[in-house]
Image (tube, rainbow, N blue to C red; front, top):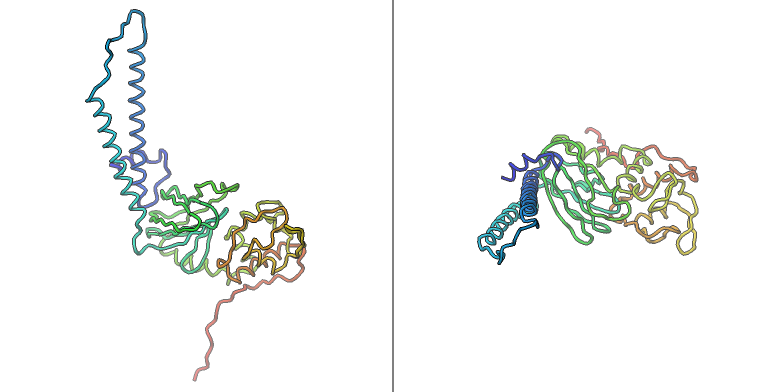
Length: 342
């Protein structure tokens, strides 16, 4: 029944369904929707009838005593809504249990939410701010938040799950079609909540493994400054720091390397490699004057080579740095050792 209602009402309120249990969600939604429409029409019709028929008019005498009780009517308006509520509960609970119970072979991806960025961590350690998944494969998401409550919402998959500080939450789905789909934060999480969005990229099964292997090795293929810019965008740095000189949640990073800045408390510090590394791993250690301590730590999330790439990127966009920017990747592909033939 719910599937039939979903087909009847498809594309009225919802985007196209692209997940395994989207039809159940849509079916229940439209069941409740049409029940509400029916009740609205009935109530409005009876109200209009009563207003016209029982309006006050000259020569009309009210019945005395007026009717005040009907057992049949009271049973009717109690039993029928109870049956409807139980139907809604049954399909809602069945759908909830399906969403809460992933199959044992589901592909697991860690999700880290923070102001105002999504990080998706894959089993091989690669981190991306877009969610890449294989088609027709159960995917299990394990969510956590570094600061406040966020809510991962993928409309086409009918998925919405909160990421709560201090605990893990889980959900799963199977994408049934390839393509790119919108991902949003559906919980107001601060001033720039509206920009906390991402993209779900669903790959063909044969393409996903190749994409993941290639994406995880970008440090071995890019010059450090280019790799640093990629990390800057992937890890959400661009959400709070501009590179054009304009002020944002955090200070702009244009021309900062080699510059002296005033800190909270009145002291000065020169922005060099050590300062940048410390600010990434312990962001509350030295706060630039007129800014708040709102940056989350990246301790345990960034490797030394990634931090070095970020530093090289900041050098490349600073007029205060006049050194040489390396053009060779910081990480090299390991070559097999050569042995002499005996």
